[in-house]
Length: 303
Picture 1 (tube, rainbow, N blue to C red):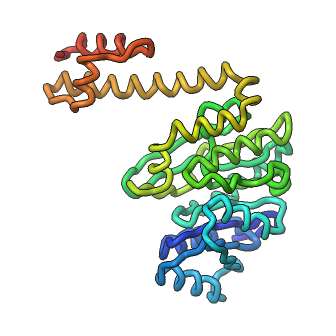
Picture 2 (picture 1 turned 60 degrees about the vertical axis):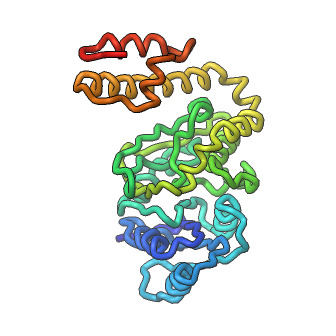
Picture 3 (picture 1 turned 90 degrees about the vertical axis):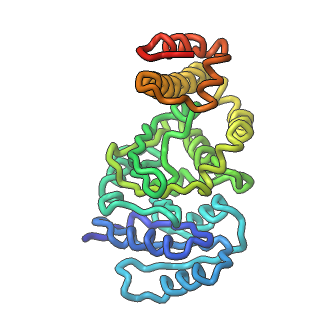
């Protein structure tokens, strides 16, 4: 295994107990190791979590130096800013304390940034674990690609200079989407700014019913309204990309739901109440009527 002085890692944690140890060990197991791991504890209160932090800081056997920075609870954006501010390397890897990296993450992602000065950040596909086992394939891109949806994982490698120019993470955002907001701010730092993605699942992303990304879905419209107002000039300049991007995602989900409805009908299975209600009163103006007609017209279809 090799080490590079070009990159340091920031791991944020709040009451994550042994999961934090898994995140740090995944950094230590990199085929290309960071020069330092900065763990920012965002005001943990649980004894087990505090004990893990103490052990990590005192463990001299770890192949990468670990520095623990403690702060009052300010949210993940504040914790990330604290860690990146502490870092000295030109590249910073941001990792949440409940996720893990595959061993070749840095080896595969860092060269994208080294080869392209216009790339402000880079990451890879994700493999989820926990309640969902799947491969998630974000595409990266320019600001137009990010106006309809977030196209980069929260775990990524960024240029520290771009972070400084963007103003860092918005510390007022404590209800979710702070990473999406940050990427939009990064992509406004230069006309050619873009984010790269390695098309391999190199991030192990933990999923749980109570995780922050799931909770943020409950406030999705409020958060998107905030982003539109904050980045209104960008939305105005790229309105076609933004609207068509949302519509493409909506169509894909509609076809997925429609296919499942047709399968259930063909096998004589009872429909979920929400699906049955949709057939009784399809939505108008968004492809709903056409979808309902296709479902009831399919083999075994019924109303």
